[in-house]
Image (cartoon, helix red, strand yellow):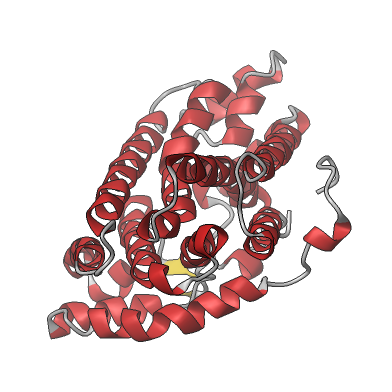
Length: 335
């Protein structure tokens, strides 16, 4: 990123230590709770979880607790719960999008069947709520309600994403609002959930949540860029799928709103079946019409807003710095 006035020391080349720490912290509880599932479902869920993942949301939950209390230990259930909800969404999203691979491996539905994938996702979602409500924190019920609200918002965003596929043109504003729900809601929850569990003030919860919301929009903007121009070897997914499904992602919405006559050509292409050469043409048109540039600029703006939100309240210095590192890391993927 070049548009945010932050010290270079805030930017990390590889995964921040907090992500590596999150894996070590949550794995024992994650392993234990998944073991509660019925054997058929358990095998599918363990297969999915074994594909890895950066555990960004778990790290954010742990860091939010450390930022207000100095200790991550009180947020482990929150970190596990948020990761379970995230993975529920991935299992179901792969069915909805027809994606046969994730992180270079067959998806759950393509390996175990759609029925098993559906109930595996359902079981993981139920488990997330159970984990939080079992936590001894006096704020566990508040945290579970916070997670439930975020999950509903995420589902609403997914519904809008699906509905946009059949619309000829979707405004950038509607696309960003969809991203605020589909991606931002769960990152907002992750960024405040641990803080809630350890008794943060309302102002701290709001500021940390706003950090997560803006980070989610920035993250989605980058993901949308990678969904058209990303390297499948690096992303583990086909770069053509967003275009083939006529998704109205941020770059595409921006290109359609450019006012250029070629935007009508792009809209026409996105209303019919697409041959491989059409996919290439769509990607080129979106780029020529400024879609990629718009999405990257939007990501920069929301990254800056995310980091600014952390300055509104008193937070411990080291966890705050780690939150900044995470924000840079997830928005500086290969683009």
